[in-house]
Length: 131
Image 1 (tube, rainbow, N blue to C red):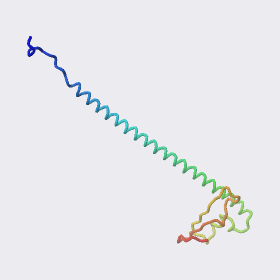
Image 2: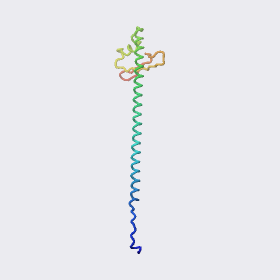
Image 3: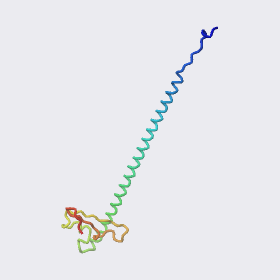
Image 4: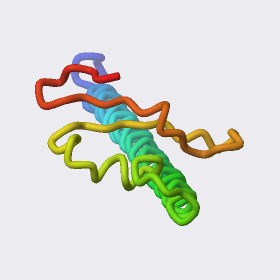
């Protein structure tokens, strides 16, 4: 037989083209998985920050409430023992001279006296500090 007339099997080149496409598809799927993972980590970090902030707010609210209850208790004790109404927080705040004023004070839980009228800051209607 002559070489021109021999039937050689045809080699398909489509397998080589398909393996390149499969590689690209796998890479795209891996990139999508990485993006979804990054979004999940970021979301969980945000949720953790929100939960922590909520816990801090609750703790601060409880501490503030406890301090005010102690001041109220001390004020009741002082008002029972004091003759002057203005020596107590309730008497100081309820005075008609202070109507419309903003009063702020600091509670010192480690101090021997939890609250002192001498350490109150007071602002009048025009936000001027009174002494």
